[in-house]
Length: 76
Image (tube, rainbow, N blue to C red):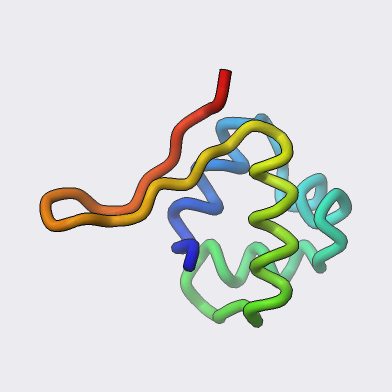
């Protein structure tokens, strides 16, 4: 599952504002803003919509392992 930091970093890497990501992923911008700030969670289905969009735009999400936290990479 994506973390708030991963979503924020991915959005920033793509040069998207909260409103732009919300419109593209069909998610309320306020939902994205609350999630990224850690104020509120996001339903699994909603988070999947955000993840699918970001991955389609070139983000590869990396899971945490024993020595490193979760992250992301830009696809070529």
